[in-house]
Length: 315
Image (cartoon, rainbow, N blue to C red; front, side):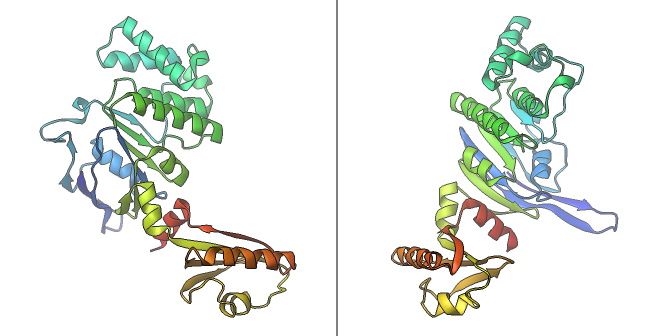
């Protein structure tokens, strides 16, 4: 896929909503597009699904050019939209059977498939409940199941766990993982949760202001950009007036003169590259300062995927 989309605002100026996004997803692989609100995640999906006309670029499904040699409805694709689009008056079983029948299944086959899907996501007890009676989390489960109704080869998930509690979120993750493990599926996920991207994705792309800035496996991104360490110092009532000069510099604590300092109301954060030999030195010094009551607490560790994500958005 390689696409670009321009939009015209009320002031008459042309803005690039999506700028030269290029990626490929292989069979039985999930690409997670990670980005903040307004980054262009949903717009990218809208272009793939044909809801937005692309300014320039091409989208291919299995070597077939979309909107040229094939249409999206012929690609066996399933979509779980960011916001649940459900009929309030329909029952859960009827909703699933409706979508399964569209794919050409008989009434009996649709019943069997609907029961299987409800069991997969743990909503069997809601089979005869109307959609209007469901909680937000159960509606998200139903929206996900709808995207799985046609034995899709391509699964597109637009923030599938938005607005749900942590327990439901993990249940949805397990449902997605189970489906992926049992089917040869190409999966595209959009999310603003680094935890979700890491849990479900084989590759992660960081999208910011319409541009895909970085792409690679979670392990690769950590290896490439997560070599930095973060040290957070929680000072006790200013007992160390100038922590940077008194401890960091005078004791050469972090073993380098190149670091980034951020000062907050009740703590200071230092981001730096470090050697393996320096790590125990830092821990020992922090424990000593804490024991002497000069600092109340500290955090020290390697940059997480979330911190990498935040740092790259600032660039």
